Amino acid sequence: MTAGIIQGLAAVINFFLSAVQLLVFASIIVSWVGDRSNQIVVMIINITEPMYRPLRRLTRNIPGPFDWAPMIVLALVIFAQIAIVKPLMAYGDRLMTAEIQAP
Picture 1 (tube, rainbow, N blue to C red):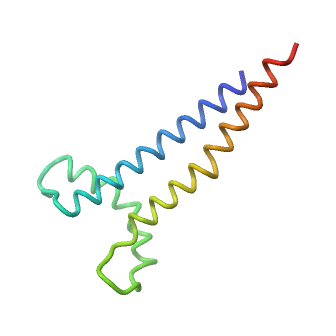
Picture 2: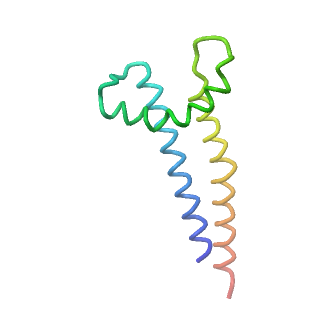
């Protein structure tokens, strides 16, 4: 029972992080070709900008025209998937194995 809850929690976290990844990729594409009067484009910008704002304050002194905020968000999401989701899944697998083997 506990193993299923932990694996379910890991799956929900992974789903959320994957959705963030997709939104970041969409915002990158939209920043190049998006029509800012389109409601979907506005929604993507409204969701991703709050994630970017604090990172832009940290990276504003880096010279060049490149916006590092989306890349940093992607790196943080990937790190979270590796550091949080994978260990939770592994722990859930171990619990599942222990529950199956228990009499």
